[in-house]
Every structure is written in C-alpha cells, then in structure tokens.
Amino acid sequence: MKNIYIVFDKLHSNEAGGLVSAYASLIQLLKDDYTIKVISIINSNLTRHDMFSDCKIINISKHDFFPRMEIISDSLKSFKLFLLLKELFKLLCYFCYIPISRIKMRNMFSSDDIIIVSSPAAGMFMSSKNRFILEIHTKFEYFWGTNKLGRLQSKLMSKPELAIFRTKADALKAENMLNSTYIYNFFDDSYLKESKSIGQKNRENKIIFVGRLVKSKNLPKLLDCAKLLKEKVSDFCLDIYGTGPLHDEIDNMIRDYNLTDNVHLCGFTKDKNIYDEYAIQWITSDFEGFGLVIIEAKANGVPTISTNWGDGVFEVIHDKKDGFVENTVEDIVNRTVELMNDKDLLINISNNALSNFDEYSKENAYLRWKEILSDFEGELE
Image (tube, rainbow, N blue to C red):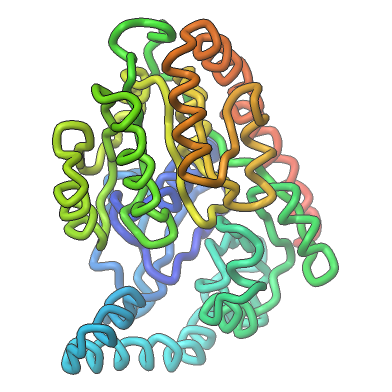
C-alpha cells in the first residue's frame, strides 16, 4: 500500500480540539487503503497517541519549542517577565527551525508518497521540493486576513499542490491564489445509539456546548447568554464540555454570574452519545472553519444555535430549518426560549437536523477523499 504522511507543526493530545479528532477520523476512513504515518515537526513528546493507535508517529525535532500565544499575551498583561521571555524564546526557535526542517523534509519522502499538511503553520516547515496537499481547518480569513500570525505563516509556507478547505465559500475565496477545493468535515455515526431522545423529558431545557476553552470560542458571550436565559427560564441547564487555558476564568465567571446551579464545567469527553441528553447546542465562536460539533449534534438530532462565525456557517446550518444563526445575546436567548416553549417546533427542527446529517456521513466523505487522492496520485505519476 502507498504511504500517506499527515504533517502537524506539533501533534497535540486528545483534548486539543477538533483538529486532532478530525484526523483521527480521517485515518480510520483511509487506513484500509493506505499506510498512514503521522509527522510532528516539533517534538510532541508522544510516540503513541490513543486516537492514532494504528499509526507510527515521527518527531522531526528532538525538542519541544512550541510557543503558546495565549501565554505571551497574558504575560504581557500581567508583567510576568520571566514567563514572557521563555515563550518569546520558544517563538524564536519555532521560526528559526524552518530552514532546518525544510532540509530534513526535502529528502524524507519517496516520489509516490502522499503528504497531507494540516495547516499553513505546518506548511512553513515543508520544503518547496515537497508536493503536498494543504488542509485549512479554520476559516479563510485566519491565514489570509487580519490575523498577523496567520498571515505570516501563510506567507512563509511552501506552496501546496492542492489546498482543501472545509467549506465551499472559503475554497472560492482562495481560488485566485491556490488550487483550491473543499471537503466537509464528516462524522462516523455507526457507534451511536440507534434511537434518539428527540422530544423526550431527559432533554428538557438542557443545552450543550462542546469545544476548547479558548478565546476564539467567545465563552464570555456564552455565559452572557446563560445569564440572560436564567431571567426567562430559571431551571435551564448548560453543560460545557472541553478543556483549555480559559478554564479558571470561565469557572470564576460562572460564580460571579451566580450560575453555579445552571452552568457546569464537565471536562473533556470522547463520548459522542452525550449529545442525546440535550435539546439544543450553543456555539458563540468568533470564527470557525466548519464546526465539527454541529454535525456531531446533527447525528444525534440536536439542532445548533450559532453565531455567524464565517460564510460557511450557512453550509452546515440551514437557518430556521435544522438550526439557527443568530449573532446577539438577545437573539440567541430569544430563539432558545422559543424552542423551549414550543415542543412541536423543537421536535421538527431536531428531526430536520437528524435527517440532514447524511450530507456529512462517513460514506460521502470516503468517496470524496478517494476522488481527490486518485487525482493527486495521477499527477504524481
């Protein structure tokens, strides 16, 4: 079998968010057709990864110098000089390692290997001699917009043979600068419970959030929604699943807002059946690439109320049919109250969400990936 190499700038643990689980799903999708190996440019301190149990993990560097931008930002605000200097040194090493990595990567692959690079941040470390497929898991503007670090990474990146975006809207934005296409994220629902709890008592007034506790998810807005909802529906429940650097800040906000009886930090979970215990999912992100959690929720018949995190939101949420796109705290809460008070409407929207899931199935994703990889392999010959 031919090799597929999946390249990360640094491979993170399970709790790192949707990127890791997206590639874990891709590996399972393609493992019968290819031998798949995972490359971490920066030492991940992992030789095994429980979500990549079928793969060999190759660390290019012996050292971990991955910079954490949130620590740099927080250190500046709190005048923690030592911590700031430590992270700035890592940032310097991060960029200085680019030419070293390119030399190593130039001769690492055979001519018929397929290389999938997980982001422009990883693409910086690839040699111009490497022919690779680039994937973009966030919205187009993150790397080609106003984000300074993202723009720098895209400028330093070696040019890919093909760029795959998560939405059609983002692929169209890139077509003048890259050979671009798109593949929707997918979800394997084969191990979910066959029966769904749509309309049942165990979902009543229950809301779920799933995601990393990071700035881009706009978690203060999530709690502002919870605070306002409590004035209208006193017995609601919002369970927050995920980990991240903002955990303590969010925990304090829950206490400050007097929401400890309603809002709960539940930690990280891999159990996708958990959605079946909830009526609605909230997303308050400032930006996303696609929103894998939206299709995970759809597979369980749970509609999502989401902010407009990018043009692609309307490709995964058909507004007012299988979910809702609302921007203000007031609109999110009013829509939630409407669904909680109108059981027939909630059941209808939930059933629509479940029936729309097929578009993002494993079977459709497999056919699309095989088409793209077959074309790519043909060009390699």
